[in-house]
Structure formats: structure tokens, C-alpha cells
Image (cartoon, rainbow, N blue to C red):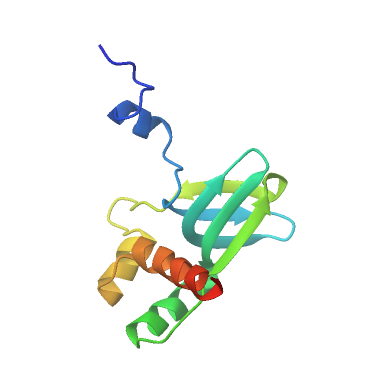
Length: 125
């Protein structure tokens, strides 16, 4: 019998939903901000995110639909600023932000955010 904490088991995945690449909504304090994006890392010191301010979501969708280039921020927030982090999931009949992004652009939100980050890394090399 396998231990639920061993790699390759579904139980291990269910135990840690906040893995790199997961789309999340972050609420920060001092000053209060909300962000949406792909989680890059989560440590006791803080979290790194590739994303945008939630208020700019519709602007991002418009840019992507028009084929414009955009640069989501790659940011680190110390844990003392993080008030809340939630998975970007649908709520009943209300679609998630990622689902709204895909419905309006035809593209995978996580793929767009991480591809943009990868492209910037290649430019620096």
C-alpha cells in the first residue's frame, strides 16, 4: 500500500493545491491590493506571482484579444502582507477568472501568463 504523501498519488496533490503554476487570487494588506496570476513559489518568507492587479483584468483581456504584447508583473510579497490567497475556481454558476479569460480570448490563462514570463527570461539571456 502506498503512503498518501508519496509522489505520484492523488492524495498528495489534493493536500497541496498551491503549487507553482496554479492560478490564484491574492489579497494583500498595507496597502490593500488584489492580484490575479500564476503562483511561482510559496515559502514561509513570502510568495512570488506572475500576474496583474485584479482591477486590470478586463484591460488584459482586451490587449490579448487585440494581439498586443503585455507584461504581467513578476513580484514577490513578504508573507506579512498576504491576507488571503485563494484558488481561482468557479463559484456555482459564476466562472473563474481563468474561465472568463479563456471564453473571451480562446487562450489558456496559465499558459499565457507563464509563456510571457518565459519570453522575458529568454530576452535577458
